[in-house]
Every structure is written in structure tokens, then in C-alpha cells.
Length: 98
Image 1 (tube, rainbow, N blue to C red):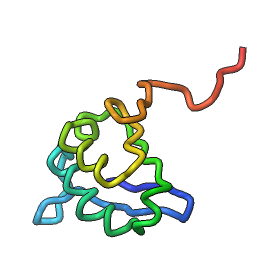
Image 2 (cartoon, one colour; image 1 turned 90 degrees about the vertical axis):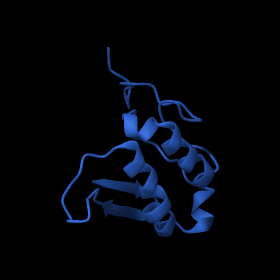
Image 3 (tube, rainbow, N blue to C red; image 1 turned 180 degrees about the vertical axis):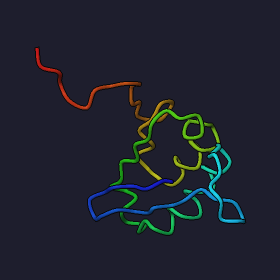
Image 4 (cartoon, rainbow, N blue to C red; image 1 turned 60 degrees about the vertical axis):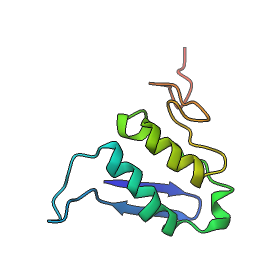
């Protein structure tokens, strides 16, 4: 399952399923299809200029084919491992107190 949270609301959910509507393990090929067929339709073209697309370092997310699709859709590039803007593995989202 995939979804996105952004300023104007939530996009999704999108379920990765086969023709029999059964859940499948996501791979790079399936993940590459999702932005082109689902996310592009959900995003208004003007919103893409203001978008920061952040994802984790899952293999399907960081495959060359997946990253290329995201780079063509999102002008700022993805925030991800191997992305245009790197997101360090296991990085804290807040400072840890002493």
C-alpha cells in the first residue's frame, strides 16, 4: 500500500495488487508504474513545482527505473537514498536531548 501526505491532503491509498486483486510484493517494476499511472493523475501540474517527494531507501524505491520516473515528474527531484536530495539512512527527525 502506498499513500502520500501533503499540504492539500492525502493522496491514495494505492494498493499493489495483481489482476485477481490480490496483494503482491512490491518490486521496482510495480513501483515504477505507480507514479506514472496513479500519482501523476492525482497531482495537479502546478503542484509538482512545489512538491518535495520523500521516500525511504527500499530497493524498489531506489532502483534506477523508479528514480528516473520520479525525476521526470518532480522538478526538485526525490528526497531519497540515491536521490537528488539525499535522505540519510536512519536519520532522526528531531534532535535527541542530552
